[in-house]
Length: 317
Image (tube, rainbow, N blue to C red):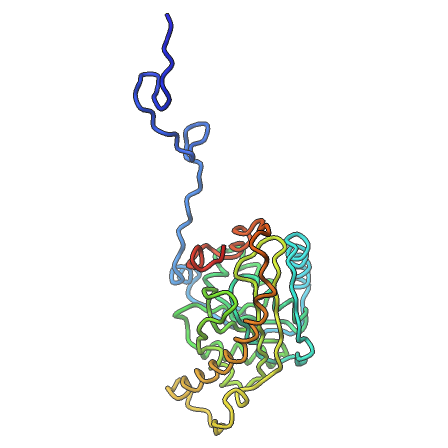
């Protein structure tokens, strides 16, 4: 008895066949990985017994000398970044660097590669200590363990303990002869080749400590791929007095007052005026022709970041 072959789009009984779910494996099970639920910072902090920030989390005084763990991880990182991923970084202005004990303000902050640009430009010593996001860094227990072992991070949690703890952290770093690093935009969201709005935290810390400030301009980290070009430039050291100009009488307002916040905003605006044109000048050097291959672009761009607000509209390409 001959059987008629079912027409395309139907099953052997002549009924319309449903298209096969591309997620189904051989056994008919869904094999695609579901997106992970992203915990809120408050939930992450609660799981660790509270939002421990700065020196309270670190548990010891920051040091300027590079330890064995840091040196080993630095070698591995350089092999991956410049050997495997073949990143190319143009750096200038090293002649402006003080010996140590200064506050480095970096912009434009556009991705996870930015601290590595700082490390590449400044060398292994004195150590750099970053005021960085606890929720972003401590997404897993092993990352928190590794960061604590290597050193270099002073975590901050949004809605945490306030600016005073970070002033104490910065003061300890500077007194140790190390470098305190902060990205005043506070987020990687922002336009490529231009600065985003500065938050006042960095300026408040600089104002209270009256530290030497080294502006640091970066470009090309908003998306990453094999062979990506990036650029950084160290600018001449400055100070709160220089940034505020002759109109400031040198009197510091009471901590936490509206007058102090207004002064911090003026300092932030002056830093933006200093850094903005340099970032704009560096950016064209990092742009590859549209036809150039961008291998591993999505994987490398999000390698140490969770997909978030930048995906799509805020990322070129």
